[in-house]
Amino acid sequence: MKVFLRDTQTGWYYQGPSKWTPEQEAAEDLAQVARAVERIFEAHLENVEILLCYDDPRYDLVLPVPPSPSRPDPLGRRQPSGESRPGEKGKSTSPGKKEPLL
Image (tube, rainbow, N blue to C red; front, top):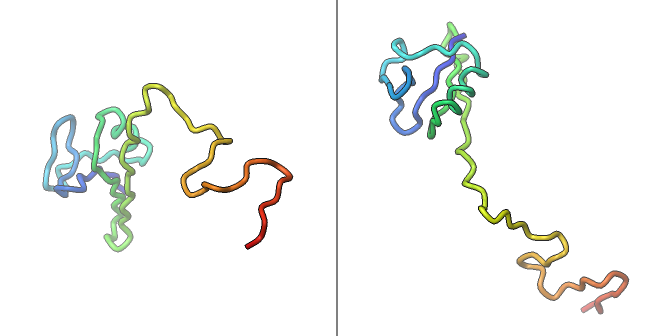
């Protein structure tokens, strides 16, 4: 099995730092999925997928790589679990108090 990184927008294959090629034969074979993932993080690659290539192309697999999460909120704000969420207006927050049935 050979493991390649492919740009999802151009279809070109990763050849090395800042190098891409349209030819799969010229691309860097990373040999293992774990190495491919490491390379994605090391090189800060975006819009790529991992391509697993076998002797018989019928068995080739494409592993999508999700986009990097957006930058975290610099203030670290989180919504406390006790606050109402959108769509929950009018719901009682008092335990034991029942709303009348309509």
